[in-house]
Image (tube, rainbow, N blue to C red):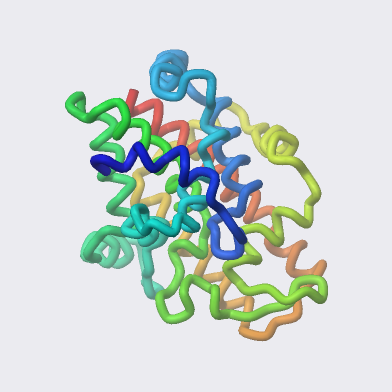
Amino acid sequence: MKNLWAKLMVAVLLFSSVEAFAWGLTGHRIVAEIANHHLKNRTKRELKKIFGNEDLVYWANWPDFIKSDTTDVWKPTFVWHYVNIEPQRNFAEFKKELEAQAGPNLYTQIKVLSSQIKNKNTSPQDKKTALIFLVHLMGDLAQPMHTGREGDLGGNNVKVTFFGRSSNLHRLWDSDLIDSQKYSYSEYARLLDIKSKSEVKRIQSGSLEDWAYQSHQLANDIYANTPNGAKLAYDYEYKYIHLLENQLLNGGLHLAKVLNDLF
């Protein structure tokens, strides 16, 4: 990411449709807002050194906004947002397949960015950029269709209608289901973040591979129950809204865990 910082403030203003963005604008902000509520004091102090008065929510969608940058400076980062995995029978086989994939991808870059942030030799500018991407990619990891299948581009080529409007499987989980609830990101974060301390600790347990497998299992279920051409409405929303909300909560709590461990 050397020499990229000069492009940042220009690129942040460039954005278009959120059709293929993970979680959409609201979802990523929900994840970041939940994480904000679970940061340790030392983590908050370190983040303030990097972000000043801006918080995680402010930067949560920037890695998607830069997909509209016409200079191609950020083009190599586009593949960081997903990892394609065909259905695996169990965690052991999933982990083996995940680790065998050549990067960069969602899984490899979360680890790379974490190492850059922790490295004392990383410049302040590059550390900030790495942190912005890490916040976003931890949200991506919780969106099941970002651990989907290469053949249909993570569900982008699976066409559906949602309450009579044309959509696709990826967009459905990015934004359609979330936006249909009509909450702001702060309202939704407050409604979801009601777990006890013991429940939070349980959700934050496990490894990056465990969290990726959770998303992958849910993706497999979504594929099985959302065929191409499906006409979806209240029944689909009823079936999946709580699973989607769990993933938003998991994403926020996992992000907080990662940041607390780093700082």
